[in-house]
Length: 155
Image (cartoon, rainbow, N blue to C red; front, side):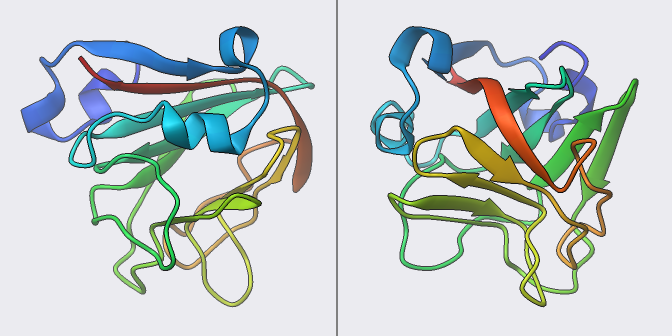
């Protein structure tokens, strides 16, 4: 979280963050992640570590929630630590920021590819280059197994 601070929108850099959800504490469930979310207008930081110890995730200017369509703003971005921080910001090509239901959470998209996706039990996910962020694959492989996942929100 400290390394990501300078990458956040300026209005958020001095705000205190707190842990809303952790697979180690709360179990592996996308439904539980949605329930533990902050206020709808509160930004969210999703941190993932896969079973190959690769760390990556996403920042959303609004809370991570279940939705019927894509939501979010151009402040949304993807990031990876491989081995140092790389940030993938909005390209302006589309507005496929965040979309989720009980079976799937997606961040970024276009042409059937998602910058980051997580399944409903939070055991598996994937990452592909996508039009929204023009990102690299965030993990070492396009599909990965999740070891730990945390959702942070503003205090």
